Structure formats: C-alpha cells, structure tokens
Image (cartoon, rainbow, N blue to C red; front, side):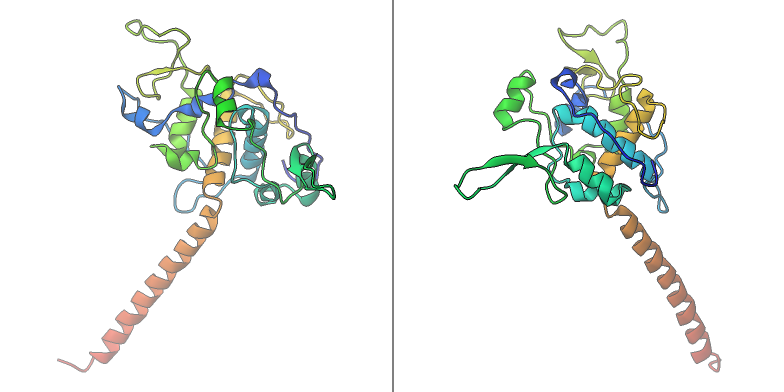
Length: 262
C-alpha cells in the first residue's frame, strides 16, 4: 500500500463483535494451567536492525478498523498518527472523516457530533465500561494501545493467540461456549476465533489469509505500543559505533603514551 492511491475502509459493525476479542487474555491467565510457548513467525521489526514494514502497518490498521475496533478501543492512537505508518495527509483525513466524534460546545452551549479530524483520537466502540461489558457477556474488552507490552510473550503471544484456535484434544472437554486455544491459560477461551479467511479485502490486493491478517494486525499493535522503536534502534547503533571508535582511539593513545616505558 504505497503512493497516493485512494483508500477506502468499511466501518465496523456489531456483526463482528467477536473480532479480536481473543485478546481478552489477561496477564494472570498466562500463568493458569498449561500454556503452550508462543510461536514466532519472524517479524520484520524484530532484532537490533529490524524495522516496521509500512505495508504491514497499513494493512494491520485496516484489520483493526474493520475487525478489532468493533469491541476494542485504541485510545492512545490519534488520526494524525496515520501519517507515521505510511498514509499521506489526504488519505489520513479521509479515514478520519469516516468517524463521528463529539464536538462543541456551540454558541448555545450544546455539544454536537462532527466528522473527526487529524487531531482527534479514534473513538471507543462503547460509551463506557458498563456498555462494553453488557455487549460482551460481562467481559470488558481491553484497550489495545499497549496490549503487546502488557502480555507476556509480546508480539509472539498476540500472533499465536490469533492463529492458535484448534480442535481440542480428545482428553479435553470444553465448557459451554468455550473454544480451544493452547496459547491461552487453561487452553479454553470464551471468545470465538476473531479472524477468518478473506475476512477483509485489503486495499493493496494482498491475500487476506488468517496468518497474514494476524501478522499485519500484530505488527500494527506493536507499532502502537512502541512507535519510536526504529528511532531507538538507530540511536543504539550510533552509540555502539561511537563506543567502538572511542575504544580503538583510547587503545591507540594508551599505546602511544606508554610506548617509551620498558
């Protein structure tokens, strides 16, 4: 998804309330029961020289917007941040305008709804926590802004959970309304699989397999949790180069100073 080609996304509907609810896994649940170690698909941003793939970031935002945002907020993400993941200003403004946010007060002191602008943050899917619980059988879907940092295993855990749904082993009896996922504490999760083949239609034509969507949205959520990672890595490399050069210089000075001492 490059250049200035127009981007069109579909607003989420309640028909996808189950989307991304798999991330309801809480930290303590990781310690409950036998949990399979997260698998790593090998993300582009991992490692000391890793960087975010802008195509994955933009596709990941689309998965969040069309699937996950039906029940998960992203309260620290402003529409202006879309420019940091590769969208130009025109595209970012067009995406923001799809949302309605509360504006005002007007001259009469009344609040009103208006199209979102770049300075606004993505609206939450529910008016309050009670409304969120009422729509999700008593569970409160967590905000996804820092979800990658808040879960043991980080991005590998999020990816594994999203792709880990499977038929239960013969010796496992699922509770009513539960699904089997070996990456969730206890192996049983109350929310159904959030991703399905061709669940979204990528604007750049990429095949929307479950693996691809999980990889893309995990990359986006990692960026949301640590948008300055690339700058931090660049600074780290500069510091290491500086320390190596300084070490060599000090060694040469030491050799020069002590060259006449026998």
